[in-house]
Length: 388
Image (cartoon, rainbow, N blue to C red):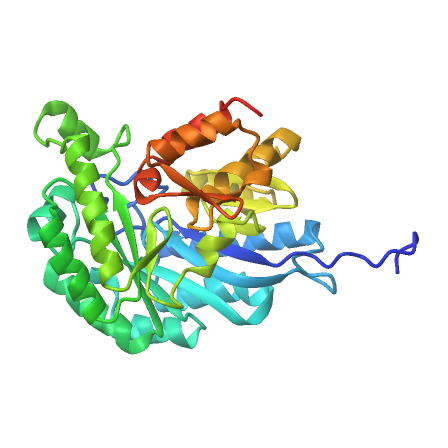
């Protein structure tokens, strides 16, 4: 017992996110922290820097090491393109971070890969290192759509990678993008093929334009035309119905899964569970604060190598920030948010139901598929909504 006679509350479970910024080529739409300028020496230096970041953080936080270490239940390696890392470097990265945490026996370990860089040798190395879930960036099985997105992969390579992943890993996820040129009939064919290839989880995103990307420049010049919002909405809603008919239920704003295939790591984000983010551009939620690491790989590595925490920003969440998160984050899931966490008027609630954006059942507000499509607007409306 503590000095005051109370039994200390055990630390909450947590997760780990590792960001690998390397890509073989840059997609036209991508705005994440990534670079196509790297060689073997640079990648090796990056792995050493991430391991060093972990050491620095562990030396300052008893929940990362020692007898009071928090149990970590998920690990997610994203990018960038983690499959550009040499097998020995990947093993070294995982061993020096995930391997030094107090891990649960049934931990979920996910790694992202692009189809063109997932070889059988790499997949088996990942599996032997403890990876039990792979997420493939397919985006489309239409060559014209892939070309428009600036993808280096062709449909046949994507199909081969999905077959390979299904042979090696117990759980396979795949990303799809609703981009210009997509239609509901074609998406039905592609999702059906993905299911038949063993995909149990699909992340389905609507293409977004981000300033500074090649795609944004193409749209601004008129060389690429985006579909009208009404067409995007109709195609999206039909695709959601298709996924449901194929056994993929929507459980989060962009994620659909067959029974038992939901991403535990993603779910922890919306439940406000702690997770440690390591690597350039990584975000984390640890010790009651949210932080972001430096996005420039060189600047990140210099800070980590010098034994400093390589953060660009950090925010200790106050009462108001926590209140907003309790309202907004659960909305991204099909369970929705408890009305006890919503400080809004009954008139405001009724208006959203009438507009078909959400349903209120058993004391919880959950978005409809149409509401999920407008999640950003609804979050802004919630933050400014009139209270009871």
